Length: 236
Image (cartoon, rainbow, N blue to C red; front, side, top):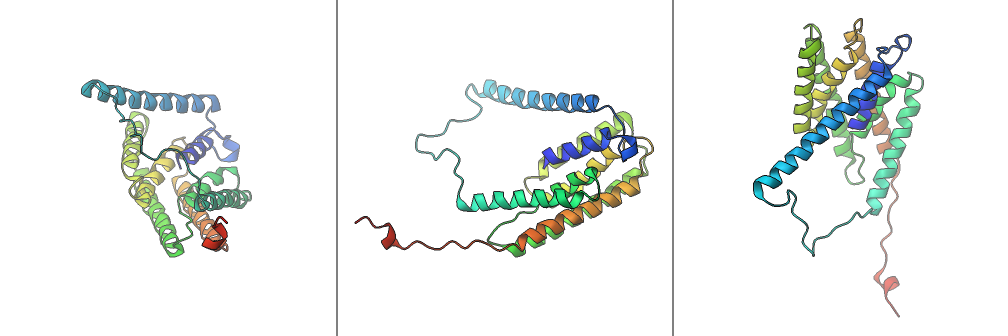
């Protein structure tokens, strides 16, 4: 999610003004992303080192000899990856008439909706709560847009939102989208002269489009696996 989110936010800030972007220097945007990534990595390394020094041992306990290790790609995993590829390509194709700047939100929303084989009804419900999370987050952003958030205050608000996202993203993605939406819109509209209402409307429409693409992929036929008879596997 964050790969798509960083790309979309950076593209919105660095795109030419004639194309609806912020017109900021692409080199500066990339340098700031690299600096922020380095700072985050340094904090993670320092935390691991501090944990090791505190307990006098490795921060991560090694696996026991009998533990299962390695990466195994099952048939269900391959089917899931294939559907994710289909979703991504379909989202890009849908975004072409809208413009390159709209692809990121459409892809991010669609990829946030699981496409399992076992429970399509659950995926549809999650599709609805993703859109609901975007709507709530858009309302929060519109409320914040009436407050002049600039400079250091903007940085503190963005840092607070990012920290809250990290706490909830693995527990409830709909709640995370409530925070991701104002975070991204604050970044996209941080350039003077931006239209908060227009940015919010575009974000909502793009999210609905992404959810629609994911719902369409849910309708694709499944490949049913034929059970193998034990007699076929018997060694004669």
